[in-house]
Length: 100
Image (tube, rainbow, N blue to C red; front, side, top):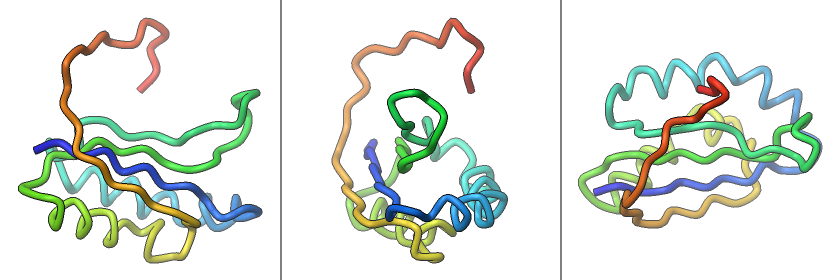
């Protein structure tokens, strides 16, 4: 089952996000095809990061919660709030701008 993990950073924690980023990316990479999509949410001007969105494949909510809890960002205390919701992919259009 697919789940969206939406995490909002605590204000003023860009340094913590950057310090933990490599471990976070390693964690996502190690999860392999369980990660459908992932990336930061941005400020309106696109210059700053405000949180994270991950779409993952997990057996159930407990598995999604465990995945979110074990993210190095979460372990470092970066997030102010984390919401986990079941999600169904209905449509997918690859990005045209080369974004990954």
